Length: 293
Image (cartoon, rainbow, N blue to C red; front, side):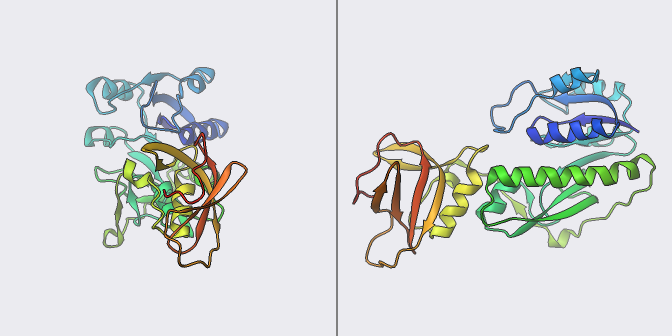
């Protein structure tokens, strides 16, 4: 089974490496040389070179030059794991077996953008790792493999990324032989159960201390490294916040946003229902006790 691989993030690297370890026949790789928006960007060229695989740097995966090059590799199936733009119908119909995509939610639930971030922001306790056959719509094709995973209270963007990757690699071990032997099933999604998550914007990363402590905690852990981080505004400047802890507070007569205390390079701020301790940040000087954020 001849596989053409498309990807440009760290998850792409791990899945391509896994396929090579399983002796899958990779006949070509499409990747990017740089990315201005993927914080987990990964150039697959070196892995391709090390394994003598033809590769191509691509800006528009749907343009004529890319389609021609992909067709020349004569793939039976295309794997697209970690690509931020939609594939158009000409590419989706190029390989006889279609295009296999990936989305780390329990499809048909939670289609759309930034699935790991929104899973943490919303405080989900579980989700799923899903491989599906891509169609022109977003994340709406038949499912090949789906495996649930738990989201722990102390998971953050980095640990959840690792958890999702390990889950996906275990799935590849199981479904690759089925694809190779043409002994697999496609499970249609129930579109009546679908919802779509929107693209995250800069305002979504602003900490508003009128939020609950739990909501702030979830926001910070969702956007921490390898992502862009949450931020606060102090003295009309933006500063990053990478890690916080929830601190119980029974004083209901203090307004949200007031700085309550300092300890070393950390500080505690009142929220609407308690307090948050800012553990990792980029402030050069701590705001004074009694200041408002």
